[in-house]
Figure 1 (cartoon, rainbow, N blue to C red):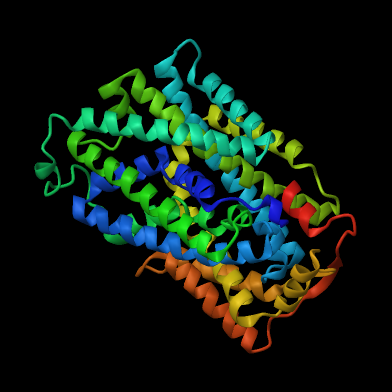
Figure 2: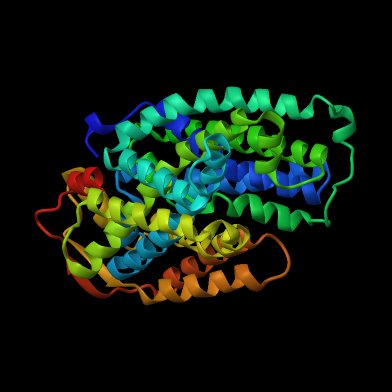
Length: 431
C-alpha cells in the first residue's frame, strides 16, 4: 500500500462506527432485551464486543503491515490460492446476503416514509443506490459515513428519548425480560455473530491505516461505542415496549423520523457490506480464472443480486444467517493468526515482498491441513454445547493449525505464479 493511500485513523474509525451503529445492532440489542434482563444483556454485549475487538485488532495488525485485502492476504496466511478463493466466495456470498438483509430493512423504512411503492420495489431502489456509491470508491463511502453517522446518532438519541419518556430508566434496568429466556452463551454468540465477518475481514479496512496504534484506536472506539450505544438502546426499547420488533417500535413512536433513522442506519453500513463482498468475489474469480476482474463490474453484479435477495424476502433469514456466521468464519481468523505469528511457513515471502513493494512471486495452490482445520473447527463451533461457539471455533483453529505446523504437517499442494501485471499496489487499490 503506497503512503499516499494511507488515511487518518479517525476517518476510518467513523466508518467502523458507522458499520456497528447500525440497525442490525438495534435488532441484536432488542433480541437480547426481549430474552434477558438489562445487566445480563450488558454482559453479553461486553463479552461479544471483546471477542470482536480481539479478532479485529489481531487481523487488523496483519492488514496494516502488509497493505493487502483479506482474500489476497489469505494466500500466504495458511489458505493458499485455492483456499483464498473459497474464502472469497464465502465472504462474497455471506456479505451479499447481509447486504440484502439491510436493504430489506431499509425498504420497510422507505415504505413508512414515502409509501408509493411496495417493499420489494423499495428494496431494489435502495440496493441499487448503495451500489452506485460503492462503484465510485472508498472516498464516496467515507463521505457517506461523514454525512450519515452524525445525523443518525442525533435522530437515534431523539427517538429513543421519545420512546422512553413514559418509562423510568430506574424501573427498566432491574425489570424482567418480556420474552422467552435467553442464556448468556446465546446472547454473546448473537453479539459476536452479528459482526464476526466484519472482524475477520478487517484487513480490507486496516490496509488503509498508517500504524498499528491507529488500528487499535479505531477498533476500540468503533466497536465499543457501536455495540454499547446502539445495543443498549435496543435492550431498553425492548423492555419498554415488551417487544423485540425495533422497526415497529421506532416508527410507531416517532413516525417519519423513525423511518429516516432506519434508512440512514442501513445506508452507512451497506456500502461496506457490498465493498467487502466485491473484494471477496474478485479474489475468487481471479483464483479460478487467472484474470483480475474489474471491481466496479463485480460490485454492480453483486449489488443487483443483493437487491434481488432483499426483494425476495431474505430478511426472514436474519437469525439463521447470524448463527451460521458465528462458527464458520472465526476459524479463518484462527488459521491466519496462527500462520502469520506462530507457524510462519510463508511469512518470509510476505516480508520480502513488503520490502520490494510487490506481491510474492509464488503462492501455494492448496494447503490441505488448513481445509481440515477449518472444517473441524467450524464443526466444533456448531456442535460443542459449552462455552461460546465463536471463541470455540477460533481457538480450536488456532491450536490445531499451530500443532499441525509444528508437527510439519502444513505443506503446499501445488503452486501458482503471480501475474506480472498485478503488483501489490494494484492488488490493493483496484480491490
